[in-house]
Every structure is written in C-alpha cells, then in structure tokens.
Length: 328
Image (cartoon, rainbow, N blue to C red; front, side, top):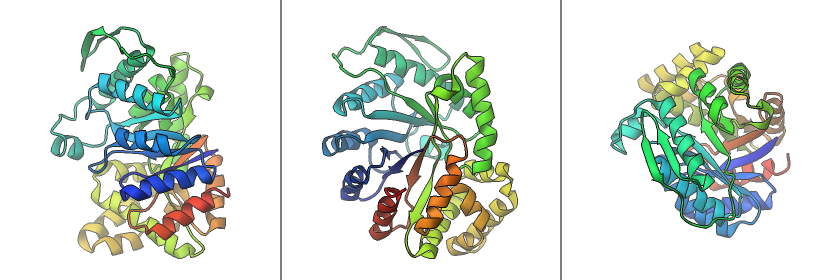
C-alpha cells in the first residue's frame, strides 16, 4: 500500500519542509488541498522544484472554484512542472464553503463533478474541447501549449453511495475521506459495480482512503490529538462526516460527539470518541499501534492511504508521524 501525507494549510515553511522530509523518508506522495487557506496549484508548483521523485497531488480542490477548463490548464501545468509526478484530487467541498466563501451555487454536485472531469480530460488530450452538458456548454478551443506529459490520474473525494458510483464510472481513483474501514468495504462494492457497468476494469482504479494520523512514542498524546480532530469534523463541519460515521454503524457515538461539542465544548466531545472509532478510521498511537492500523487498512480494498495531521498537532508530532510512516 502506498503512503502519502497531506500538508494542507500548515505554516508555509512547514509545508515545504514536510514535502522534502516525506521524500527523504521514501513516502509515495504529498497532497495539498484547498479550504479557505493556501491556494493549491501555486504551492504545488513550488514543491515541484523542491522535490525530485515523490508524487504531488491536489487533495482536494473543489470543482466549483475554477472553471473546468482552468482546472484542466492547472493540471497540465503542474504535470509539466513535475515531469509527470502529478495526480489531481477533486471534490465538492460543502455548501457552507462554496456559497459563503466563494459565492457560488452548490448545484448538482455529482453531475457537476462528472462533467468537470470530462472537460479536464478533453483539455489534457490536446484535442478541441466539445462538451454539451447540463452545467457547461463548451466548444471551439483546445489547450494551446506544447506538452511532454499527458496522463494525469483524477481522484474523487466521495462519501455517499451515488458519488462513489460516479467515481467508479468516470474517475481513476476514489478517495474515501474519514470513512471507517468496514464502510470502505461496503462502498467499494458500489464502486466496482459502477466501473464494470461501463466496462472499466476496477483493478486498474485506485482506492485511497484519506484520514488523520498521529504517531509518537507517547501514544496517548497522539491519540488524544486525533480525538480532537475527529470531534471538530463531527461536531462543527455539518452533516457529511456525521452521516458517514453513522452509516458505518457508529451512529450512537456520532450523536454523542455532536451533542457534547455543542453542549459542553471540544474537550468533552473528544472524550466521547470510542477506541473502536479510532481503530476503524485513523492511524494513531505508538509506532506499533500505527503499523497495526496501517495493516488493517491494507486488508481493505485500499491500495494507497493519504494521511492528514491533527488540527492541533505541533511540529514535533508531525515530524514524528512522517518519520514513523517511513519505517512502515
């Protein structure tokens, strides 16, 4: 199983340093997403000059924040600057970010994503883009620069059944985000079925869970940092992550986390998170515990795993996590 880290929205110098550290530790990839912090493609261009072999990816950029053609241009540009070491991770984000930060309508998320991927692929092909869809009608232009790189794998960050099926139909990879291992296995059946219905080979597609990781000789400190991270996502980030945990059979714990967050605060919410949720959804604890959890992910359909740091993590914990991932 390939292992990557996600350095989104860290201090700027730390993102640079940790990308190089991940390469030194022979990790497979570094991913940069966009929330309401740093812009991803500019940063990836810089990281492409600081690294030599590690794959660099967007994990994730929202489909609503750039036109599909511009996303295709950005993909072509970073692929060229990395000499083919680029993978594109796309997603919808959520209504709060898209409407209240970007001022765009959060419309037809699944269809909008599928249409966006079609346009990106046409841009990357070098042929004239022609797309007549519900969200976009495009014709008459093609990417005009001469390129050496062509193929760019496109991943989709998807949680729900319909979105997972869309990923199997049109994407090169599926990124379940904070999805418990048992639920990954259930949703993978939908991913495979959708791919096969379109005569695509599921074995040629990637499954890359995205989750939070903290590894330290002080295992309880690492696990507590992860608990706080989960509490924030369940308690403060809307319905998506609460529903994902509930669909995996942890509805009672998800409700307790959310209730505690709103009634008693983040510390109480973190304390309600069960050990089983940690084991099923994260990579957290001592190096031995973390290696066992990575092995458990390997027993799912995952062939990659992309790991975030907890929101509260200090530099020492993040560096320890990278170094211990390199020993797996």
